[in-house]
Length: 183
Image (tube, rainbow, N blue to C red; front, top):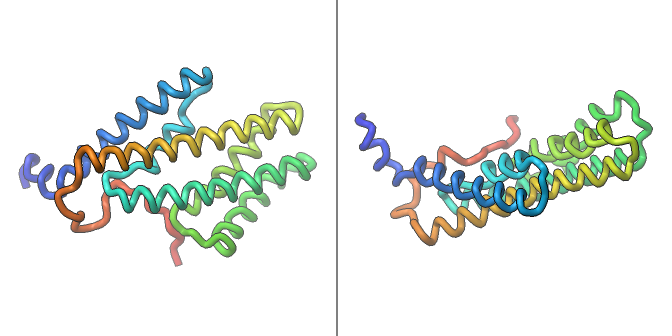
């Protein structure tokens, strides 16, 4: 198959995804540089995971990321508050987060987001001398993750109105961040 035909076979989904990522990255980068001098990498990574040229996919991933990020944040903060700094806290907390996400929350899309977020929050303790400083830094990183997700979804929604898909994709978007548990 020739390259130009490949662009047409899926209604330019790859081009659409690239444009969404370009716009989203620019928005996140500029917004976070205006607000703070922190690295926008957490927000950009989350924005990429939450954007998709197919709106239903983006909404699905957005919901899973946000809910699982909240689970991870809650577990991470709990460990920071009650933990004693043991070497076993991080692996136990991450395992507990996976179990809560898999068996209590039960939203398999982006289920790995929960332990990732817990790790982000708990790891903040390593660079701070106080639990309060660690919690503040962890919450700031989680806020960046959520901000990136929101930007990703908003860019997807805006682009779907500016450049609507001609037809429903034949298969799920190849660019969606699928992350469901295997049996």
